[in-house]
Length: 544
Image (tube, rainbow, N blue to C red; front, top):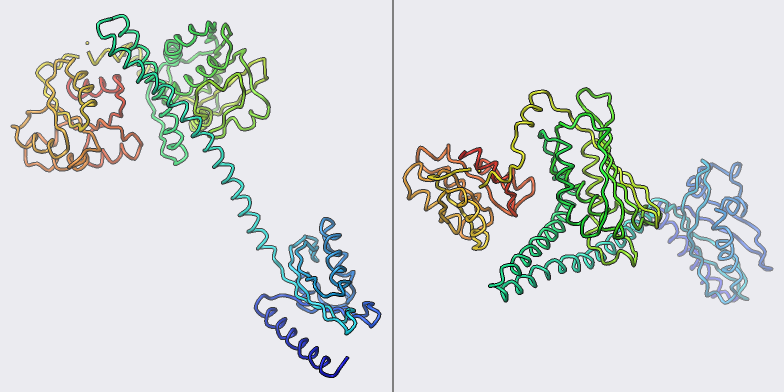
Protein backbone atom coordinates (compact mmCIF):
# COMPACT_ATOMS: atom_id res chain seq x y z
CA UNK A 1 0.00 0.00 0.00
CA UNK A 2 1.48 3.33 -0.96
CA UNK A 3 1.96 6.09 1.58
CA UNK A 4 -0.63 8.15 -0.27
CA UNK A 5 -3.20 5.35 0.09
CA UNK A 6 -2.36 4.90 3.75
CA UNK A 7 -2.80 8.63 4.32
CA UNK A 8 -6.15 8.52 2.48
CA UNK A 9 -7.38 5.67 4.72
CA UNK A 10 -6.26 7.51 7.82
CA UNK A 11 -8.14 10.63 6.76
CA UNK A 12 -11.18 8.57 5.72
CA UNK A 13 -11.27 6.80 9.10
CA UNK A 14 -10.92 10.12 10.88
CA UNK A 15 -13.83 11.61 8.92
CA UNK A 16 -15.89 8.48 9.57
CA UNK A 17 -15.15 8.68 13.28
CA UNK A 18 -16.13 12.34 13.35
CA UNK A 19 -19.34 11.48 11.54
CA UNK A 20 -20.10 8.71 14.04
CA UNK A 21 -19.43 11.07 16.93
CA UNK A 22 -21.76 13.73 15.51
CA UNK A 23 -24.55 11.26 14.75
CA UNK A 24 -24.16 9.63 18.15
CA UNK A 25 -24.46 12.99 19.86
CA UNK A 26 -27.55 13.87 17.82
CA UNK A 27 -29.30 10.49 18.02
CA UNK A 28 -28.00 9.16 21.34
CA UNK A 29 -26.82 6.05 19.54
CA UNK A 30 -24.15 3.52 20.37
CA UNK A 31 -21.31 2.46 18.10
CA UNK A 32 -19.37 -0.71 17.57
CA UNK A 33 -16.22 -1.78 15.76
CA UNK A 34 -14.57 -5.03 14.66
CA UNK A 35 -10.95 -5.49 13.48
CA UNK A 36 -9.71 -8.18 11.07
CA UNK A 37 -6.19 -9.48 10.39
CA UNK A 38 -4.67 -9.88 6.94
CA UNK A 39 -6.28 -13.30 6.55
CA UNK A 40 -9.76 -11.79 7.13
CA UNK A 41 -10.16 -13.27 10.59
CA UNK A 42 -11.97 -11.16 13.19
CA UNK A 43 -9.43 -10.44 15.92
CA UNK A 44 -11.14 -7.78 18.05
CA UNK A 45 -14.64 -6.57 18.88
CA UNK A 46 -15.50 -3.42 20.74
CA UNK A 47 -18.90 -2.34 22.02
CA UNK A 48 -19.09 1.30 23.12
CA UNK A 49 -20.28 2.28 26.59
CA UNK A 50 -23.40 3.85 25.04
CA UNK A 51 -24.08 0.61 23.17
CA UNK A 52 -24.05 -1.40 26.40
CA UNK A 53 -26.07 1.24 28.22
CA UNK A 54 -28.83 1.11 25.60
CA UNK A 55 -29.14 -2.63 26.24
CA UNK A 56 -29.15 -2.24 30.00
CA UNK A 57 -25.57 -3.46 30.62
CA UNK A 58 -22.58 -1.74 32.26
CA UNK A 59 -19.18 -3.06 31.22
CA UNK A 60 -17.24 -6.00 29.79
CA UNK A 61 -18.13 -8.06 32.83
CA UNK A 62 -21.82 -8.36 32.00
CA UNK A 63 -21.45 -7.68 28.26
CA UNK A 64 -18.03 -8.87 26.97
CA UNK A 65 -16.36 -7.53 23.84
CA UNK A 66 -17.35 -10.62 21.86
CA UNK A 67 -19.54 -11.02 18.77
CA UNK A 68 -21.91 -13.49 20.38
CA UNK A 69 -22.64 -11.02 23.21
CA UNK A 70 -24.75 -9.30 20.56
CA UNK A 71 -25.71 -12.14 18.21
CA UNK A 72 -27.05 -14.39 20.99
CA UNK A 73 -29.58 -11.66 21.88
CA UNK A 74 -31.10 -11.40 18.40
CA UNK A 75 -34.78 -12.30 18.13
CA UNK A 76 -35.14 -15.85 16.70
CA UNK A 77 -37.22 -14.53 13.79
CA UNK A 78 -34.55 -11.93 12.88
CA UNK A 79 -31.31 -13.74 13.70
CA UNK A 80 -30.75 -15.70 10.49
CA UNK A 81 -31.41 -12.75 8.20
CA UNK A 82 -29.37 -10.23 10.21
CA UNK A 83 -26.31 -12.48 10.50
CA UNK A 84 -26.50 -13.24 6.78
CA UNK A 85 -26.44 -9.50 6.02
CA UNK A 86 -23.54 -9.07 8.47
CA UNK A 87 -21.31 -11.77 6.96
CA UNK A 88 -22.30 -11.00 3.37
CA UNK A 89 -21.13 -7.43 3.88
CA UNK A 90 -17.79 -8.60 5.26
CA UNK A 91 -17.23 -11.16 2.47
CA UNK A 92 -18.13 -8.77 -0.35
CA UNK A 93 -14.60 -8.11 -1.64
CA UNK A 94 -15.90 -5.74 -4.31
CA UNK A 95 -17.03 -3.40 -1.55
CA UNK A 96 -20.48 -2.70 -3.05
CA UNK A 97 -22.71 -4.06 -0.28
CA UNK A 98 -24.04 -1.81 2.48
CA UNK A 99 -24.84 -3.03 5.98
CA UNK A 100 -28.16 -1.45 6.96
CA UNK A 101 -30.56 -3.58 9.03
CA UNK A 102 -33.44 -3.40 11.51
CA UNK A 103 -33.98 -6.10 14.09
CA UNK A 104 -35.22 -6.96 17.55
CA UNK A 105 -32.74 -7.49 20.35
CA UNK A 106 -33.33 -8.72 23.89
CA UNK A 107 -32.24 -6.15 26.45
CA UNK A 108 -31.20 -6.81 30.05
CA UNK A 109 -34.80 -6.57 31.31
CA UNK A 110 -35.77 -9.53 29.12
CA UNK A 111 -37.93 -7.60 26.69
CA UNK A 112 -37.26 -7.23 22.98
CA UNK A 113 -36.66 -3.77 21.55
CA UNK A 114 -36.23 -2.63 17.96
CA UNK A 115 -32.85 -1.32 16.74
CA UNK A 116 -31.46 0.07 13.51
CA UNK A 117 -27.81 -0.70 12.75
CA UNK A 118 -25.73 0.64 9.87
CA UNK A 119 -22.04 0.02 9.28
CA UNK A 120 -19.16 0.71 6.94
CA UNK A 121 -16.32 -1.67 6.14
CA UNK A 122 -12.79 -0.40 5.38
CA UNK A 123 -10.73 -2.84 3.32
CA UNK A 124 -7.12 -3.67 2.74
CA UNK A 125 -5.45 -3.13 -0.59
CA UNK A 126 -6.36 -6.64 -1.74
CA UNK A 127 -10.02 -6.15 -0.84
CA UNK A 128 -10.04 -8.07 2.43
CA UNK A 129 -11.74 -6.60 5.51
CA UNK A 130 -9.71 -4.46 7.85
CA UNK A 131 -12.16 -2.62 10.11
CA UNK A 132 -15.94 -2.84 10.37
CA UNK A 133 -17.65 -0.14 12.40
CA UNK A 134 -21.09 1.32 12.63
CA UNK A 135 -23.93 2.92 14.59
CA UNK A 136 -26.70 1.34 16.59
CA UNK A 137 -29.98 3.25 17.33
CA UNK A 138 -33.02 2.27 19.42
CA UNK A 139 -36.05 2.69 17.13
CA UNK A 140 -38.67 0.95 19.29
CA UNK A 141 -40.90 4.03 19.53
CA UNK A 142 -40.52 4.69 15.82
CA UNK A 143 -41.58 1.13 15.00
CA UNK A 144 -44.51 1.41 17.38
CA UNK A 145 -45.67 4.57 15.64
CA UNK A 146 -45.21 2.93 12.25
CA UNK A 147 -47.31 -0.02 13.38
CA UNK A 148 -50.01 2.30 14.68
CA UNK A 149 -50.04 4.18 11.40
CA UNK A 150 -50.11 0.91 9.48
CA UNK A 151 -53.02 -0.36 11.58
CA UNK A 152 -54.83 2.96 11.19
CA UNK A 153 -54.31 2.82 7.43
CA UNK A 154 -55.56 -0.76 7.31
CA UNK A 155 -58.65 0.18 9.33
CA UNK A 156 -59.24 3.25 7.18
CA UNK A 157 -58.96 1.17 4.01
CA UNK A 158 -61.35 -1.42 5.46
CA UNK A 159 -63.81 1.31 6.50
CA UNK A 160 -63.49 2.98 3.11
CA UNK A 161 -64.14 -0.33 1.38
CA UNK A 162 -67.15 -1.01 3.60
CA UNK A 163 -68.57 2.45 2.91
CA UNK A 164 -67.96 2.07 -0.81
CA UNK A 165 -69.87 -1.21 -0.75
CA UNK A 166 -72.54 0.45 1.36
CA UNK A 167 -72.96 3.37 -1.04
CA UNK A 168 -73.15 0.96 -3.96
CA UNK A 169 -75.87 -1.01 -2.21
CA UNK A 170 -77.65 2.15 -1.06
CA UNK A 171 -77.64 3.51 -4.60
CA UNK A 172 -79.53 0.40 -5.67
CA UNK A 173 -81.78 0.30 -2.62
CA UNK A 174 -82.78 3.98 -2.86
CA UNK A 175 -83.34 3.91 -6.62
CA UNK A 176 -85.66 0.90 -6.33
CA UNK A 177 -88.42 2.63 -4.30
CA UNK A 178 -87.78 5.89 -6.18
CA UNK A 179 -88.43 4.03 -9.41
CA UNK A 180 -91.66 2.72 -7.92
CA UNK A 181 -92.76 6.20 -6.85
CA UNK A 182 -91.95 7.83 -10.20
CA UNK A 183 -93.30 4.93 -12.24
CA UNK A 184 -96.57 4.60 -10.33
CA UNK A 185 -97.07 8.38 -10.47
CA UNK A 186 -96.74 8.27 -14.27
CA UNK A 187 -99.14 5.31 -14.50
CA UNK A 188 -101.69 7.05 -12.26
CA UNK A 189 -101.48 10.21 -14.39
CA UNK A 190 -102.12 8.24 -17.56
CA UNK A 191 -105.15 6.47 -16.01
CA UNK A 192 -106.58 9.44 -14.13
CA UNK A 193 -110.19 8.44 -14.90
CA UNK A 194 -109.70 4.86 -13.68
CA UNK A 195 -110.29 5.19 -9.93
CA UNK A 196 -109.34 1.62 -9.11
CA UNK A 197 -106.08 1.87 -11.07
CA UNK A 198 -105.25 5.22 -9.47
CA UNK A 199 -106.06 3.86 -6.00
CA UNK A 200 -103.78 0.89 -6.63
CA UNK A 201 -100.99 3.20 -7.79
CA UNK A 202 -101.41 5.40 -4.72
CA UNK A 203 -101.21 2.39 -2.44
CA UNK A 204 -97.99 1.27 -4.10
CA UNK A 205 -96.58 4.81 -3.97
CA UNK A 206 -97.32 4.94 -0.25
CA UNK A 207 -95.55 1.60 0.28
CA UNK A 208 -92.51 2.65 -1.72
CA UNK A 209 -92.39 6.00 0.08
CA UNK A 210 -92.51 4.32 3.48
CA UNK A 211 -89.66 2.02 2.48
CA UNK A 212 -87.59 4.93 1.16
CA UNK A 213 -88.17 6.83 4.40
CA UNK A 214 -87.05 3.84 6.46
CA UNK A 215 -83.80 3.65 4.46
CA UNK A 216 -83.11 7.34 4.99
CA UNK A 217 -83.99 7.15 8.67
CA UNK A 218 -81.55 4.29 9.23
CA UNK A 219 -78.70 6.24 7.67
CA UNK A 220 -79.54 9.34 9.70
CA UNK A 221 -80.00 7.34 12.89
CA UNK A 222 -76.58 5.72 12.51
CA UNK A 223 -75.04 9.14 11.97
CA UNK A 224 -76.71 10.46 15.11
CA UNK A 225 -75.73 7.44 17.18
CA UNK A 226 -72.07 7.65 16.10
CA UNK A 227 -71.97 11.36 16.95
CA UNK A 228 -73.63 10.79 20.33
CA UNK A 229 -76.69 12.92 19.50
CA UNK A 230 -79.38 10.35 20.32
CA UNK A 231 -81.38 10.83 23.52
CA UNK A 232 -84.04 8.40 24.67
CA UNK A 233 -87.47 9.66 25.64
CA UNK A 234 -89.20 8.46 28.79
CA UNK A 235 -92.96 8.20 28.35
CA UNK A 236 -95.61 5.73 29.52
CA UNK A 237 -96.71 3.08 27.01
CA UNK A 238 -98.17 -0.41 26.84
CA UNK A 239 -95.93 -3.24 25.64
CA UNK A 240 -98.85 -5.43 24.55
CA UNK A 241 -100.21 -2.58 22.41
CA UNK A 242 -96.73 -2.02 20.98
CA UNK A 243 -96.60 -5.67 19.91
CA UNK A 244 -100.11 -5.40 18.43
CA UNK A 245 -99.03 -2.34 16.44
CA UNK A 246 -95.96 -4.23 15.25
CA UNK A 247 -98.11 -7.07 13.95
CA UNK A 248 -100.41 -4.61 12.20
CA UNK A 249 -97.49 -2.82 10.56
CA UNK A 250 -95.90 -6.01 9.28
CA UNK A 251 -99.06 -7.97 8.44
CA UNK A 252 -99.02 -7.03 4.73
CA UNK A 253 -95.45 -8.36 4.41
CA UNK A 254 -96.36 -11.53 6.30
CA UNK A 255 -99.39 -12.19 4.10
CA UNK A 256 -97.42 -11.44 0.93
CA UNK A 257 -94.93 -14.20 1.79
CA UNK A 258 -97.48 -16.61 3.22
CA UNK A 259 -95.74 -16.82 6.61
CA UNK A 260 -97.31 -17.83 9.89
CA UNK A 261 -96.52 -15.72 12.96
CA UNK A 262 -96.81 -16.99 16.51
CA UNK A 263 -96.67 -14.56 19.44
CA UNK A 264 -96.17 -15.66 23.04
CA UNK A 265 -96.83 -13.12 25.80
CA UNK A 266 -97.38 -15.68 28.59
CA UNK A 267 -94.27 -14.50 30.44
CA UNK A 268 -95.24 -10.81 30.21
CA UNK A 269 -96.49 -9.80 33.67
CA UNK A 270 -96.18 -6.00 33.63
CA UNK A 271 -97.20 -4.53 30.29
CA UNK A 272 -97.44 -0.89 31.42
CA UNK A 273 -93.92 0.53 31.29
CA UNK A 274 -92.02 3.78 30.83
CA UNK A 275 -89.45 4.22 28.06
CA UNK A 276 -88.89 5.22 24.46
CA UNK A 277 -91.67 3.39 22.61
CA UNK A 278 -90.68 4.90 19.24
CA UNK A 279 -87.11 3.57 19.43
CA UNK A 280 -88.30 0.22 20.73
CA UNK A 281 -90.80 -0.10 17.91
CA UNK A 282 -88.08 0.87 15.43
CA UNK A 283 -86.00 -2.10 16.56
CA UNK A 284 -88.99 -4.45 16.59
CA UNK A 285 -90.00 -3.51 13.05
CA UNK A 286 -86.43 -4.02 11.86
CA UNK A 287 -86.11 -7.45 13.47
CA UNK A 288 -89.54 -8.62 12.33
CA UNK A 289 -89.01 -7.28 8.80
CA UNK A 290 -85.69 -9.10 8.57
CA UNK A 291 -87.30 -12.34 9.72
CA UNK A 292 -89.99 -11.90 7.06
CA UNK A 293 -87.58 -10.98 4.25
CA UNK A 294 -84.95 -13.62 4.99
CA UNK A 295 -87.40 -16.52 5.34
CA UNK A 296 -88.59 -18.38 2.23
CA UNK A 297 -92.31 -18.12 1.46
CA UNK A 298 -94.50 -20.17 3.74
CA UNK A 299 -92.10 -19.93 6.67
CA UNK A 300 -92.71 -19.71 10.41
CA UNK A 301 -91.82 -16.75 12.63
CA UNK A 302 -92.24 -16.51 16.37
CA UNK A 303 -92.00 -13.63 18.83
CA UNK A 304 -91.61 -14.50 22.50
CA UNK A 305 -91.65 -11.83 25.22
CA UNK A 306 -90.13 -12.74 28.57
CA UNK A 307 -90.11 -10.54 31.68
CA UNK A 308 -87.45 -11.07 34.34
CA UNK A 309 -87.06 -9.49 37.74
CA UNK A 310 -84.14 -7.18 38.49
CA UNK A 311 -82.49 -5.87 41.65
CA UNK A 312 -83.66 -2.35 40.73
CA UNK A 313 -86.94 -1.34 42.35
CA UNK A 314 -89.80 -0.62 39.92
CA UNK A 315 -87.82 -1.92 36.95
CA UNK A 316 -88.04 -5.13 34.94
CA UNK A 317 -85.76 -6.77 32.40
CA UNK A 318 -87.56 -7.67 29.16
CA UNK A 319 -86.35 -10.05 26.47
CA UNK A 320 -87.87 -10.10 22.97
CA UNK A 321 -86.89 -13.17 20.93
CA UNK A 322 -87.53 -13.06 17.16
CA UNK A 323 -87.06 -16.54 15.70
CA UNK A 324 -87.49 -17.77 12.12
CA UNK A 325 -86.81 -20.86 10.02
CA UNK A 326 -85.27 -18.84 7.20
CA UNK A 327 -82.00 -18.82 5.27
CA UNK A 328 -79.81 -18.40 8.33
CA UNK A 329 -76.34 -16.84 8.32
CA UNK A 330 -72.79 -18.08 8.05
CA UNK A 331 -70.59 -18.08 11.12
CA UNK A 332 -68.24 -15.70 9.30
CA UNK A 333 -70.99 -13.11 8.77
CA UNK A 334 -72.13 -13.42 12.39
CA UNK A 335 -68.73 -12.01 13.40
CA UNK A 336 -69.47 -8.72 11.58
CA UNK A 337 -73.27 -8.47 11.66
CA UNK A 338 -73.26 -5.64 14.20
CA UNK A 339 -70.69 -3.57 12.31
CA UNK A 340 -72.04 -0.60 10.30
CA UNK A 341 -72.61 -1.19 6.57
CA UNK A 342 -72.18 -4.98 6.97
CA UNK A 343 -74.26 -7.09 4.60
CA UNK A 344 -74.08 -10.80 3.89
CA UNK A 345 -72.94 -12.00 0.48
CA UNK A 346 -75.53 -14.60 -0.43
CA UNK A 347 -77.09 -15.20 -3.84
CA UNK A 348 -80.37 -16.07 -2.13
CA UNK A 349 -80.61 -12.66 -0.44
CA UNK A 350 -78.76 -10.25 -2.76
CA UNK A 351 -82.04 -8.85 -4.08
CA UNK A 352 -83.32 -8.06 -0.59
CA UNK A 353 -83.00 -4.35 0.14
CA UNK A 354 -81.38 -2.91 3.24
CA UNK A 355 -78.73 -0.50 4.48
CA UNK A 356 -76.69 -2.82 6.66
CA UNK A 357 -77.34 -0.39 9.53
CA UNK A 358 -80.34 -1.99 11.22
CA UNK A 359 -78.32 -4.28 13.46
CA UNK A 360 -75.78 -1.66 14.64
CA UNK A 361 -78.67 0.69 15.41
CA UNK A 362 -80.53 -2.06 17.29
CA UNK A 363 -77.44 -2.86 19.38
CA UNK A 364 -76.86 0.79 20.25
CA UNK A 365 -80.48 1.31 21.26
CA UNK A 366 -80.44 -1.88 23.34
CA UNK A 367 -77.33 -0.76 25.21
CA UNK A 368 -78.77 2.71 25.75
CA UNK A 369 -81.76 0.96 27.34
CA UNK A 370 -79.56 -1.07 29.67
CA UNK A 371 -79.78 -4.26 27.62
CA UNK A 372 -78.14 -5.83 24.59
CA UNK A 373 -78.84 -7.89 21.49
CA UNK A 374 -77.62 -11.40 20.67
CA UNK A 375 -78.03 -13.65 17.67
CA UNK A 376 -77.91 -17.37 17.01
CA UNK A 377 -78.06 -18.64 13.46
CA UNK A 378 -77.35 -21.63 11.27
CA UNK A 379 -77.39 -21.68 7.50
CA UNK A 380 -80.45 -23.46 6.15
CA UNK A 381 -82.02 -23.70 9.62
CA UNK A 382 -82.88 -20.14 10.64
CA UNK A 383 -82.01 -17.35 13.06
CA UNK A 384 -82.99 -16.09 16.49
CA UNK A 385 -82.39 -12.48 17.58
CA UNK A 386 -82.88 -11.74 21.26
CA UNK A 387 -83.25 -8.06 22.13
CA UNK A 388 -83.23 -7.09 25.81
CA UNK A 389 -84.04 -3.83 27.58
CA UNK A 390 -84.41 -2.55 31.12
CA UNK A 391 -87.72 -0.70 31.43
CA UNK A 392 -89.28 1.19 34.30
CA UNK A 393 -92.70 0.03 35.49
CA UNK A 394 -95.58 2.51 35.53
CA UNK A 395 -97.10 3.53 38.81
CA UNK A 396 -100.82 3.10 39.38
CA UNK A 397 -101.71 6.64 38.25
CA UNK A 398 -99.78 6.23 35.01
CA UNK A 399 -101.52 2.92 34.39
CA UNK A 400 -104.93 4.54 34.81
CA UNK A 401 -103.98 7.35 32.45
CA UNK A 402 -102.72 4.83 29.87
CA UNK A 403 -105.96 2.85 30.04
CA UNK A 404 -108.00 6.02 29.46
CA UNK A 405 -105.87 7.23 26.55
CA UNK A 406 -107.26 7.28 23.01
CA UNK A 407 -106.63 3.94 21.35
CA UNK A 408 -105.89 5.49 17.93
CA UNK A 409 -104.49 9.00 18.48
CA UNK A 410 -103.78 9.40 14.74
CA UNK A 411 -107.50 9.95 14.28
CA UNK A 412 -107.26 13.00 16.53
CA UNK A 413 -106.13 15.18 13.63
CA UNK A 414 -109.64 14.80 12.02
CA UNK A 415 -112.35 13.82 15.91
CA UNK A 416 -110.42 17.65 16.65
CA UNK A 417 -112.69 20.66 15.81
CA UNK A 418 -110.62 23.79 15.32
CA UNK A 419 -113.26 25.83 13.58
CA UNK A 420 -112.57 29.52 14.14
CA UNK A 421 -108.87 28.98 14.78
CA UNK A 422 -106.32 30.62 12.51
CA UNK A 423 -102.93 29.09 11.74
CA UNK A 424 -99.91 30.81 10.21
CA UNK A 425 -97.85 28.31 8.23
CA UNK A 426 -94.32 29.47 7.26
CA UNK A 427 -93.09 27.15 4.51
CA UNK A 428 -91.05 27.91 1.38
CA UNK A 429 -91.79 24.65 -0.46
CA UNK A 430 -95.07 24.60 -2.37
CA UNK A 431 -95.62 20.85 -2.06
CA UNK A 432 -94.85 20.80 1.66
CA UNK A 433 -97.26 23.70 2.17
CA UNK A 434 -100.03 21.92 0.26
CA UNK A 435 -99.60 18.75 2.35
CA UNK A 436 -99.55 20.54 5.71
CA UNK A 437 -102.36 22.97 4.82
CA UNK A 438 -104.64 20.16 3.59
CA UNK A 439 -104.16 18.20 6.82
CA UNK A 440 -104.64 21.25 9.04
CA UNK A 441 -107.72 22.47 7.17
CA UNK A 442 -109.37 19.08 7.81
CA UNK A 443 -109.82 20.31 11.40
CA UNK A 444 -111.83 23.33 10.27
CA UNK A 445 -109.02 25.78 10.99
CA UNK A 446 -108.08 28.57 8.55
CA UNK A 447 -104.49 28.40 7.27
CA UNK A 448 -102.51 31.38 5.97
CA UNK A 449 -99.23 30.94 4.08
CA UNK A 450 -95.94 32.77 4.58
CA UNK A 451 -93.36 31.71 1.98
CA UNK A 452 -90.30 32.69 4.04
CA UNK A 453 -89.33 33.87 7.49
CA UNK A 454 -89.38 37.56 6.64
CA UNK A 455 -92.89 37.24 5.24
CA UNK A 456 -94.02 35.48 8.42
CA UNK A 457 -92.71 38.35 10.56
CA UNK A 458 -94.41 40.89 8.25
CA UNK A 459 -97.76 39.08 8.35
CA UNK A 460 -97.59 38.78 12.12
CA UNK A 461 -96.76 42.46 12.62
CA UNK A 462 -99.53 43.65 10.25
CA UNK A 463 -102.35 41.71 11.93
CA UNK A 464 -104.10 42.69 15.16
CA UNK A 465 -103.21 41.02 18.44
CA UNK A 466 -104.48 37.44 18.93
CA UNK A 467 -105.18 37.16 15.18
CA UNK A 468 -103.16 33.95 14.88
CA UNK A 469 -103.71 31.09 17.33
CA UNK A 470 -100.52 29.15 16.44
CA UNK A 471 -97.53 29.39 14.08
CA UNK A 472 -95.91 26.41 12.38
CA UNK A 473 -92.40 27.48 11.32
CA UNK A 474 -90.04 25.83 8.86
CA UNK A 475 -86.34 26.27 9.68
CA UNK A 476 -84.51 26.44 6.36
CA UNK A 477 -86.13 29.19 4.30
CA UNK A 478 -84.84 31.92 1.97
CA UNK A 479 -84.63 35.62 2.90
CA UNK A 480 -84.93 34.79 6.63
CA UNK A 481 -84.71 31.38 8.29
CA UNK A 482 -87.20 30.12 10.85
CA UNK A 483 -84.95 30.66 13.86
CA UNK A 484 -84.35 34.33 13.08
CA UNK A 485 -88.02 34.77 12.19
CA UNK A 486 -89.06 33.37 15.57
CA UNK A 487 -86.67 35.70 17.39
CA UNK A 488 -88.06 38.65 15.43
CA UNK A 489 -91.66 37.69 16.20
CA UNK A 490 -90.88 37.26 19.89
CA UNK A 491 -89.35 40.76 19.93
CA UNK A 492 -92.50 42.46 18.55
CA UNK A 493 -94.09 44.96 20.94
CA UNK A 494 -97.53 43.41 21.38
CA UNK A 495 -99.42 41.60 24.15
CA UNK A 496 -99.98 38.25 22.43
CA UNK A 497 -96.40 37.48 21.44
CA UNK A 498 -95.19 35.67 24.55
CA UNK A 499 -98.26 33.41 24.79
CA UNK A 500 -98.40 32.64 21.05
CA UNK A 501 -97.39 29.00 20.35
CA UNK A 502 -94.68 28.74 17.70
CA UNK A 503 -93.81 25.18 16.68
CA UNK A 504 -91.03 24.11 14.32
CA UNK A 505 -92.26 21.99 11.39
CA UNK A 506 -89.02 21.07 9.69
CA UNK A 507 -86.78 18.42 8.15
CA UNK A 508 -84.01 19.54 10.55
CA UNK A 509 -84.59 16.61 12.86
CA UNK A 510 -81.43 16.11 14.95
CA UNK A 511 -81.47 16.68 18.71
CA UNK A 512 -79.36 19.83 18.39
CA UNK A 513 -81.89 21.14 15.82
CA UNK A 514 -84.63 20.69 18.41
CA UNK A 515 -82.55 22.53 20.99
CA UNK A 516 -81.82 25.41 18.60
CA UNK A 517 -85.55 25.73 17.96
CA UNK A 518 -86.27 25.97 21.67
CA UNK A 519 -83.41 28.42 22.20
CA UNK A 520 -84.85 30.66 19.47
CA UNK A 521 -88.14 30.88 21.35
CA UNK A 522 -90.23 28.07 19.89
CA UNK A 523 -92.54 25.95 22.00
CA UNK A 524 -92.08 22.63 20.22
CA UNK A 525 -90.67 20.73 17.26
CA UNK A 526 -92.27 18.43 14.67
CA UNK A 527 -90.04 16.64 12.16
CA UNK A 528 -90.87 16.05 8.51
CA UNK A 529 -92.24 13.81 7.08
CA UNK A 530 -95.15 14.68 9.33
CA UNK A 531 -96.13 12.24 12.04
CA UNK A 532 -99.90 12.75 12.30
CA UNK A 533 -100.00 11.42 15.86
CA UNK A 534 -97.40 13.97 16.93
CA UNK A 535 -99.18 16.76 15.02
CA UNK A 536 -102.47 15.83 16.66
CA UNK A 537 -100.84 16.04 20.07
CA UNK A 538 -99.49 19.53 19.38
CA UNK A 539 -102.84 20.79 18.07
CA UNK A 540 -104.68 19.33 21.03
CA UNK A 541 -102.18 20.82 23.47
CA UNK A 542 -102.31 24.39 22.18
CA UNK A 543 -105.69 24.67 20.42
CA UNK A 544 -107.84 21.83 21.77
